[in-house]
Length: 258
Image 1: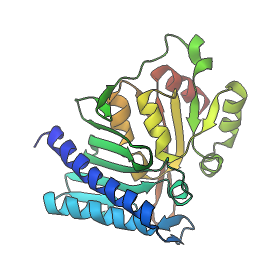
Image 2: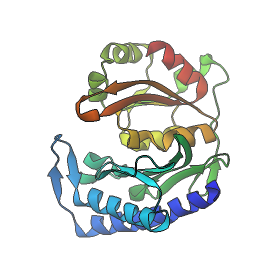
Image 3: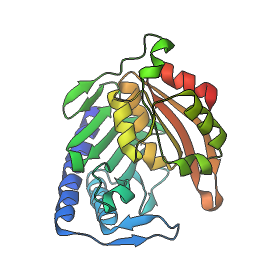
């Protein structure tokens, strides 16, 4: 089975998740707090269940790693990574910049990636070797001609607490001192903006594996650069990642700071 076929399946599934999420936005939903003090809604759980059902029906031998329901068949050659509502805080507050992330990796190599934003009718997706598309139009990231153009680029970041938790507050302060266009962009919306070339770079630290599972493929298929800085290991086997991605020259400049 080629990567286009897997991508078609992913997009069919995302079409179903979008319809479900939009329906719940009209009828309302409950919000609760997890043991780790993060927010979760019934829509997070229902959407991941929907995605898992579609995968298990079509690809019963594949593994699944999801934010809400953990790992299934972790030794499989093919693993699907799922984040049903990336940006639950935004979603629960009625801010439409949340997204659904779905990605397929083969022995750690990304084959398919998609980030869908039901609240703003935007979906970006890619399959390995076939480019990236946003709402059907192919996207190419145009790098800077030189670092002289750096001052015009927006550098998107996650929340301040991500730098605190990753131990990079000193570097964050240095970035703010060196660059005037640093803006906080929530969750996977920043990933989509970087993949479209709308921002020069997205810096996303202290994230889980599903948060960035689609991003490397999306960025590289667009001609951008993806840099994984380090992994942080926490109790109970939790691993967090620090990633920077976007226009190659901007990524290289930030690598010197971080």
